[in-house]
Image (cartoon, rainbow, N blue to C red; front, top):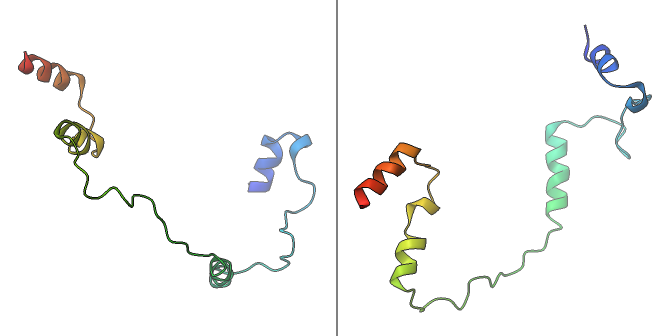
Amino acid sequence: NSLDELSSKALPKAIQRKTKFQLPGDKAVKGEHEVLSDLRKIMDQNKIFRTYIGLGFYDTKTPGVILRNVLENPEWYTPYTPYQPEISQGRLQSL
């Protein structure tokens, strides 16, 4: 009737914990506010660096074939996948 009883029946004895799980250094259970406060302190240690990814590629000419078939092709940015009959119909229309 309990989770402990279920896990003791479902898990082999060799892999069951014999002691309660406890994180090192944390003796008391923390609430959401305390955990978020601790995470903010850790995040404040991050260093923000300037990224140079993509710089230098402005003022370039993209060929029309690449622009139409890669960058402007909705197949690249929509989750829609056509069904087989729709693909077949598209092939028939193109013939």
